[in-house]
Image (cartoon, rainbow, N blue to C red; front, side, top):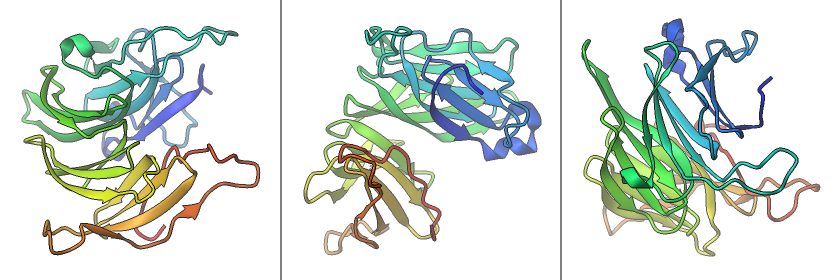
Length: 276
């Protein structure tokens, strides 16, 4: 068990070839990040990434590769047994696992060119270790409506991409292309190396805000969840040709709400594996 509510989970499958790197990262309501090297959970959360964690916000997003753990905070935490929220500053935290105790390499907020509102998703899009130095590029998505491309090792922003309204989820297409889904009912396609928006892939006809997304590369399709508790799967056209639709639905919108759920229950997370 964890000492606080779980807000996000990231499994690093590559880590299972190197048990010193761990296997599961968990972000908690109290702003801390825990690592475990046992996917079954029998070993328990035996590592804590960073002294104190995000002191003034919940961990809403997390990603990691090799020796770096990136976590993003937002949505203020609350005093125990109180409904009074604690003021917060959204922060991208970069922690190195190469030292014990773990070292906080960067804490990147608005003063560092970072986000001004909650960080909802993180994706490490490029990394390389040549035996001496590590290169790591990550993209963050925020309620402030922006994507920021970061040099995570140097701790500096490379590009800022304006999606529109709050960006809730991202999905990697390949080594160059990234999708973003937002509260404005739009899915946009980006070339993250340049920060260029290639096209508006999808616009929800009813402008229902999107809340979750997952991409399946082999079938060139992605699943979307919205704030009405519905999901749908779309096929992405890899050709950027104005004479052809950018994408088209493979399914109708399916309600995931049970009889006990209200109309305000959004899809918080979604995983698309091609056939399920």
